[in-house]
Image 1: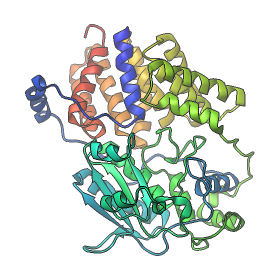
Image 2 (image 1 turned 90 degrees about the horizontal axis):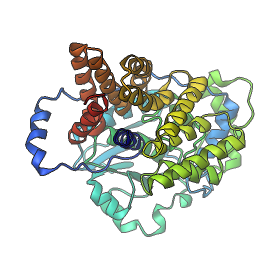
Image 3 (image 1 turned 45 degrees about the vertical axis):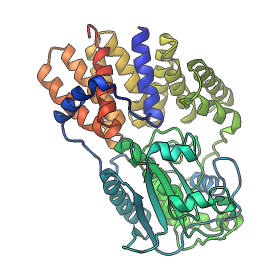
Image 4 (image 1 turned 30 degrees about the vertical axis):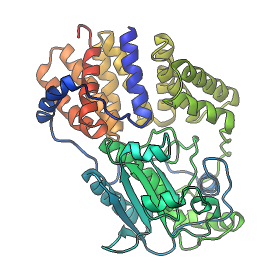
Length: 456
């Protein structure tokens, strides 16, 4: 049982943090190459996600917009509203993987269509508004330890950043208008991790710079539930680039005209306002971050997750933060207390379903619950869980959740004595897994999931 919990804990941690550089024992290199040659072609998502987020009342959307736009994640206030004025151009430097190029073009198309932003690739020799630099992870983290990816203002590329990184130029609070920005992301990670970074960092280069845990349908939330820009995010960006706004406006000036802007960009949101959602507070935010962090010990994460649940319950929250805390507790408890983990995951799953139905939130909990069902020899139960969650992972364009669910589904089919369907499902899971984790990590992940079945 301890081995099973350890494997599940590794899966949980990988699902909410940047992947570690792959390690491949030399003795298995030939076997890995052979396995890769027989893998199906990688699958990828493109275009607008099928997932549709609930319409937000404009009163709440206005509060979200102000909190995201006039404050940094560190809590520092931004004195004025800033954005790019005029057409925005994007260039890529460094050894960019093919997946980055495809995903960038898809994202620029979405930003034009859904957010109404005049954004395109920079022409040859043109100084770009936003420069995307792809670097080896080790190079990136040598300068910014622990960073998966990040964006800075007034910089055009890596060399320019190295020359300015200790000065005031890259301080967002000193901006009055955005004219240049650079995004730095790793080049030697999976296609999904690159895409996740691209969506979040390009959105922040263009618009809001803050993250809020109380936002259930947004990438502007460090919970990593959503990995691509949602309808909600596109509405925020459309409001950010509304003609009525301009760089340099004060918080009071923006707040005064924001209701008219939101009435245009979110007409279905012209409904009765609801009570403001209370801020998360530094204590809960610190607890949930520690619970989700790969740093620290298993017991440190567990204690932080338990604290996050206690704080959410004491605050009387009935929004996404309560089941999110239970999900973090379930993941943190996996290597230490199986009964606690199952109870927390069940609570998280039911809480998410009460709020959002069988959506991507519930699918995150379903991965772990399906794995538990598989380890106890319940293929029918495993299939019920994964078949309920797979559509949400597909609609949200999340390859890692989708691949995990499909590989679990294949193992359950094998246990039912259905090898042909299991083989087809496994190949589909492997195709998505190549995008989610990369080939070397996929070999390990597939082996881990296969080992969960009784008798493996």
